[in-house]
Amino acid sequence: MADIDLAERLAALQTTMSSIETVLDLPALREQVADLEQQASAPDLWDDQERAQAVTSKLSFAQGEIRKAEALRGRLDDLPVLFELAQEEGDASALADAEVELNAVQAAIDEMEVRTLLSGEYDAREAFVSIRSAAGGVDAADWAAMLLRMYTRYCERHDWPFEVNETSYAEEAGIKSATFHVKAPYAYGTLSVEQGTHRLVRISPFDNQGRRQTSFAEVEVIPVVEQTDHIDIPDDEIRVDVYRSSGPGGQGVNTTDSAVRITHIPTGIVVSCQNERSQIQNRASAMAVLQSKLLEVRRREEQAKIDALKGDTAGSWGNQMRSYVLHPYQMVKDLRTEEETGNTAAVLDGEIDAFVEAGIRWRKQTA
Image (cartoon, rainbow, N blue to C red; front, side):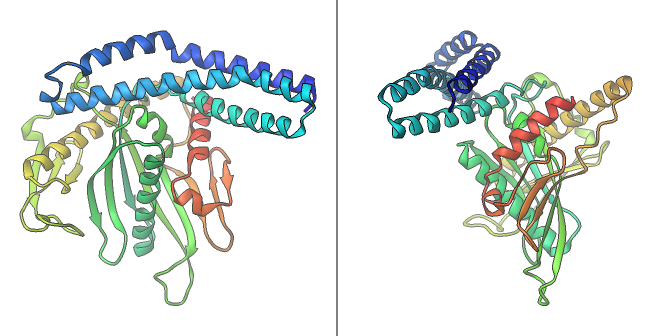
């Protein structure tokens, strides 16, 4: 690598890293950690388990952000020394190692830069992700189950805790729908770019003639409601039905009418939960999802007013946004960002970081 090119690349990385540190506001983040540590040390913290989990989750996330930023700063500052030593010694192997580290630091800075683009009103929230099978019959139900696995694997890769609130199984294979709660800061801002229609093309495993099938599934991502959101739901606006849980389960499942379905009469929104052991727990979980869905309705109404004022003509998030082709060739392509890969197996195993990052950058550019 030419000295001029190296100097320019290092200077550009220094500029980007300084911008990231400014946006993250590390001094304020350290103050937040100190405050959260004080809250976490309170002897009565776990008297309120929900609050305790929120405090410890925020603390872990803030500490992780500081560690990542400090470690990345250290690696970046070490790069000129690595190259200088390799060049002085004329060691081709050491120079190659330095270039590998430079590329790794570049990738890490690019990833952290994407995180600084999450500045929307609800971006810092946890998220509810819902997946529904659409056109395509049994293949669509199977496709919805494949997407559920893809997103839960993505969460596992990032050490994001999640909890499946509801799963409605299809008769032959796959699922009709599922909703899971991603319990990580910035989960909504990150995953909201995945919202829309996902299209799968493959040889159907359910067609005994081995024909190609196109199927669709819908992904919805909404922010989790916090106490400050004030979404009031009068009792006379909801209908609560209880029923027996269905589908695979273990001890205590399918034996009592513990599953809960709540219908919000004014909007027609229906949510359900069957994964908790008691009817009370299922009702609480279903109400949390309903609160978040109503918050999203309010957010969209407010955004529609803003868009009307500024003449916004951007395409709907609900439109087809990504195509997954498994036959006659292997390709996953995002129709908004043009991001694509031929490694379909990795994508379906949760390696969707490139698509998520490209989506966040695209959203910022088109906002």
